[in-house]
Image (cartoon, rainbow, N blue to C red):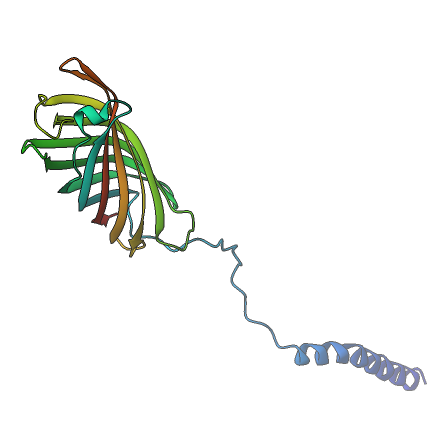
Length: 224
């Protein structure tokens, strides 16, 4: 009798165990194992690497018109006629920010006065160039330094002797840079250079606040 009773009990226990294991098996079959995922890393957005250097070099030429002026007694001496000459410009520097450059500019203007004398003007200036709009090639430029004026004759008649002097030099201008994102670009610009020569006294006549003005339009190659 005990065997007859124990067999049904044993069978019932086995059936309960199978019922308990059945959901686990179904669940395991409905959710196939996922392949291992690689560890996730945080990727920070960075700008594309640029082939440009932080240093730059500018070399070009300009067509320049120059003229002298003063505060008083210019009628006695004449301010000189407008002189026209070709000139050279070179500059080098570093990129301070994506929109700001700083450097040194050298410009040389050889001209001939109405009296037939040669005037050589050299400017050595510290300059800064700024692009107001990041997506545009437009720029403005300004600087200050020294002007070295050789044989600047304020008298257009040639009656007064030539004078060699140093002067405070200033410049300002604007232009456009083409292919500014390339290693080699191209600039078109206009600028004015000013040399404050001070007071001249010649033949007993004082010319006060003599100023030499240089207006230029030019083009240059820009290498970064």
